[in-house]
Image 1: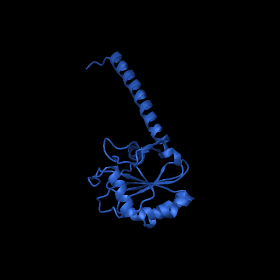
Image 2: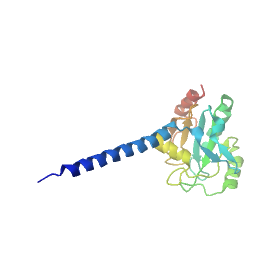
Image 3: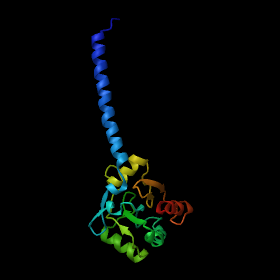
Image 4: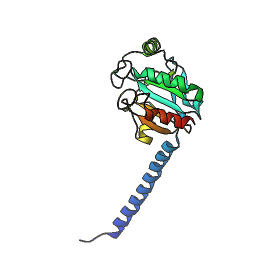
Length: 190
């Protein structure tokens, strides 16, 4: 079989250019994700106002997805206790209601009333957001893309350090009073 070296050379050049082009844009996307921090994202709060995380720059954040009709909903009590114990140390606590797991049927008014009446919540709540899937809020996309961390159920807890990076994350099964979570919070507030 006769090989046409001109064709091979052209194909090699084309392939090399393609790889360089792909590598450039792929590394650019990876670097842009790596350079982002939690403070680059914004939510809408439960009352419909802009809620940029940049206003907390330099402060650690405990952010979690929540639902009113979940078996873990009682964790609101423990998370409120964390808020009360750590707010004067600079920790920001944010709840993100979500119906991704079909357990948050209410609108923002219903959610706020439920949290205030049943748990006397004083930490920040956002409006209802998607936390997984194609329509996930950009903050949760960033967690998944940058750290391979995403909620697999309600009350997944994400601890963001003072640099705006994910320090650690905890499943629904980890209670707010767990030693693992508390030691992580103690670490990020120092």
